[in-house]
Every structure is written in structure tokens, then in C-alpha cells.
Length: 385
Image (cartoon, rainbow, N blue to C red; front, side, top):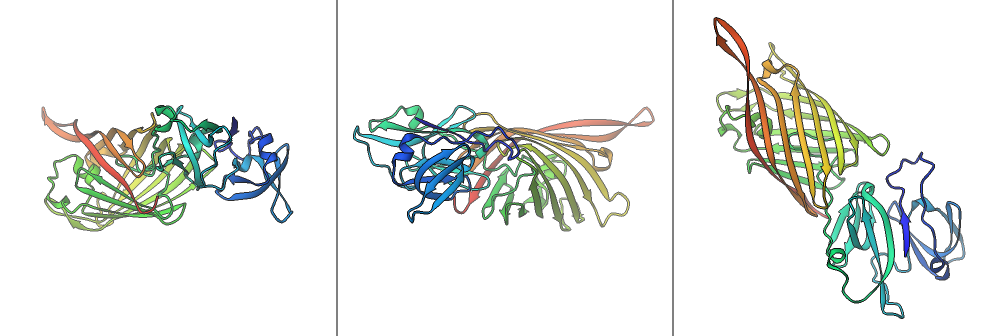
């Protein structure tokens, strides 16, 4: 068995990174395929390994030198090809061991900036974050059936890390992918990744004007008939991201009267990785057409934590700094996200704490009331895997 310890979780500045170790079988082969962290493949004969450098002789006789900590695995077969059985009738395969103890058996397909793609033995593609990978084991197995726990191990990463429940994180939509979310069967959200750092989106709720304004979830989740947003984020090291999210809501019809246009700016910070992170943010909602009270400020605090191979715990909370101006003190929500390869379900609860004045004993006294609603949403990635 050959164990590859990947340094994907570690910052490039850490000196104690662990490297792949070549085996005698690697040097005996005339041709090997070295799969690199950036998804490329180096083909040639593995000659030797000197500390952190692996020497490879290419087909034309030229020597190539690669850094061991940049190699994901070394294989006798071209990526995507099925290996030939050995004389004992054994087939080579790879087991990807994740932090939560899940073991995924399959073939490495590719790695991009956010995901590692693996094709399982049943042909199904599965995805997980590089940060979740503990090691890769290349082993031989008899062609007889393997234990069900290994062959059918189902592990799904949380591919919707840009979204909390009512707010957003400092993670962006994957480049070239279109995200869709439906909340309460009413609100439709679309987000498209233009690049690794920039995404744009639109929220559409064709039924917004018919929802009673007394419904506390109306402003919290259902928003407006249409909103346009754009998010720009950047990584700072391996465990920290910052971003700016801008939302524009044009003037439109409400339940009782016409709603003025709004501009929202949010500064976001996320700590951790896309599967387990905490997000802090500061937001400012501007009302350009309102000269008396044209600004509302708030603080965002959210948590996203993968708790099993297919479940993610979410908590999304907003605290308003001038509650009596907007009528809402806080919005508190918790949910479980059931992850699948291309979609996910969010089921939880939303609490809205509102402020009001009550006239008692000749004076107006501040009071609060809390509304609790069920929260349900469906998330989907549209387009290629």
C-alpha cells in the first residue's frame, strides 16, 4: 500500500509539509503518470527522489524535475483508464480518506481551485474540497466484491458555500457555473461565477406584491420582486477570505404602497474552508429616495459546518444597529443542509425579532415580539459538473 500525504491544507509558507514517497514499483515501471495538484499530468519513467524533488525521464530522454509536495498520486495507468489485473487477479484502485473518516474508492479525475473530482467504481462522480483530504491510498484488491461500506460510501461536499440562509459568505460561485436556489417556493435566486473572484446574480419573486407586509419573513427572506447583486471576493492565505457584496433593488410595487429603491453594501470575512467556516460581516442599506431616514446598518454572523458525509449545519444571524428605525432587531436562523452531488435541501427555522412602541401609563414604552417560521429551500447547480 502506498500512502500519499497531501499538503493541501497547509499554507505554502509552512516548512513541515509532507511529500509523496515513491515506491520500488514506481521506479521499475518504464512509464508512470504523475498527477499534479493543478490537475496536469506528467508522463515518464520515475528515476529517483532526492528529498523534495522527483526526477522523471520523459519519452524523448529529457529529464524533468517536479516537487514532491505538488504530486497528488503516481499511477501506472493514464488518468481515466482502467488498470489491468495483476497475475493474482488483483486490480489497482485508490481510496481517498477524508477528515470525517469517510473513505471514497475511485479514480482521480481532476482538481480545480475549489474541488477534487473522483469517479467512483459505479461510474458516479463525487466532489470534495482539497482541505477535507487527509490521505490517498493506492492499493491492490481482489476482483471479488468489496465491502459495501467502501464500495458504496456516499460522501457529498457542500457545493453551495456562497450561500448561508438569508445572507452570504465570502466564498464565490465556481467559475462558469450557474447556481439556483428556491426558498418557500416563492423566491428564485440565480448566481453565476464569472471568475474565481467575481459573481453576479438576480433574485426574482413574482408573488412579492401579494404578500402581506405583516409577515415577518416578507422582508427577511422574500426580499422584493426583483434584486440584482454582485459579489467580489479574494482569498488571503488558506483559511481566510474577504469580500464585498452589492445589491440593488429598484423601485417597485409593495403590498400597501410602492417601495423606494434600495442600495445594500456588505463587507464579508470568512474563516476556515468552504465546508467548515464562520462568516462575519457589516452591512449598510441605503434608501436614496428617503431624505429623513436613509440608512440602516447591521452586523452579520454566520456558521457553516459539515457534520457528516452528507449533512451541513447552518446558522445565519443578522443584528440591526438601529432597530427602531427599521422595526427589526434581529433575524436568527438555523438549518440542516442535505448535500447531494449537484443539489441540496435546506430545512430549518427562522426567527424574526421586531421592535415597537406600546402606549402604557401615558408613556410610549419600547417592546419586542418574536415570530418563528419554518425555513425550507432547494439549491441546484445548473450546467456541467
